[in-house]
Image (cartoon, rainbow over all chains, first blue to last red; front, side, top):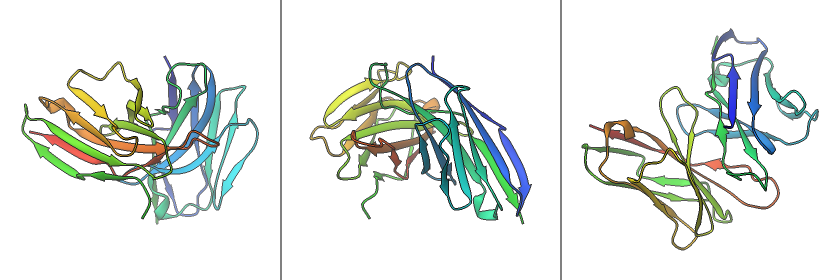
Length: 115
Length: 114
């Protein structure tokens, strides 16, 4: 059974801190890993990673994938109160495997940034 | 706005009643997905369509749940004989099947079964 595990489950920091969120996975025929941000509403897309070792960046957020060790990290530098949210990691599998196309999510990391 | 839309946003129903939700995907997306999310958990896959074809349905989905996408555009998700355990946020997402495949989510329908 495909499995996605995120750590930590929750994290409390102060503005300006840097945080690292972790996502490990066990899936058959891995295709891609996606990060989403969820703030009391639907998840909003952040990054999709398919190639190992290539960092994706958007402002203060960055993410990298390690396909050999089966994990990804999401970094947020100079955190702001607006970064407070649940961060979800999900994986998809490729053609030839079952369940092609669906997202399998981890349980999420709750990030709280205090002023 | 050309994002994914869902209707209604909130639904309160009594146990045993039937409910139906609607999802309108991003217009150029031919894939449409339904997920369910309960408090403190990540979304859980229910089913997905490519155009009008339903390609997969979760083994966890009971026979009380049915989804359609008759013309390959909007989709409906029906729950018959609702139970309190059906209370959750029902999320719809869409994507294309070319290039990046990333899924974009609608605002969700929050169902409360009393």
